[in-house]
Length: 71
Image (tube, rainbow, N blue to C red):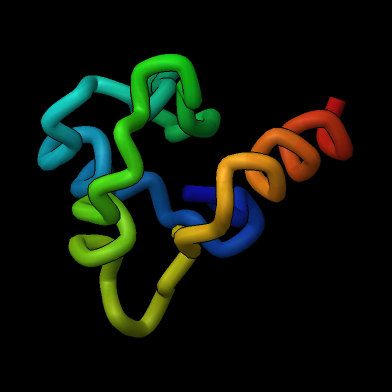
């Protein structure tokens, strides 16, 4: 999964429902996904509010590239 932090409202639903604790959070704000722990189940994307849809499921190579682009 890739999180568009511009769209994210930091509702924390993704963090709460992630079975792998792969959502990175700091000071009550979502910062991204820990791809070392993420299993790609898609629960985070499913619980992201419909009007927001800040999380999209992509292949791991795309997610890695997106993370490097933000650095």
